[in-house]
Length: 90
Image (cartoon, rainbow, N blue to C red; front, side):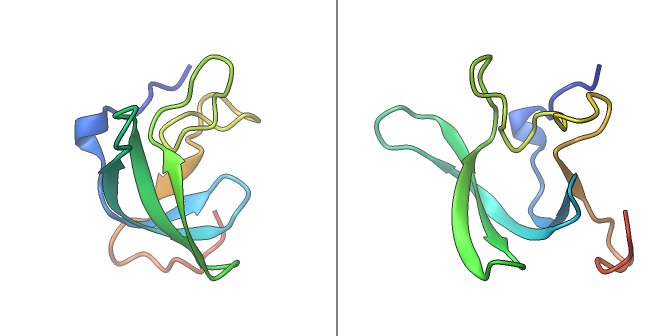
C-alpha cells in the first residue's frame, strides 16, 4: 500500500488528480481552531480556490496526501515534475 506523504515533505506546485484534473497547490495552512493542516490549491478546471485536509481520517480518507480510492498504490494528487507538460496524459 502507498505511504502517505509526510506533512513536512509537502511541495507547492502543479499536481495531477488521479482522475486527470490539474491543480496548483500554493502551500499549507493551519485551521485556527483544530490546528489541522490543509492544502490551499487552485482548480484549473473549475477556476476556483479551495482547501483540502493534508491528511484524511479513517472515516474520511480523502486528504491531499492519501492514496487514490481506485488504486492504493497511486497518490490522489501527483506532483507534475518541472519541465514535464502538465497537459500530457497521466
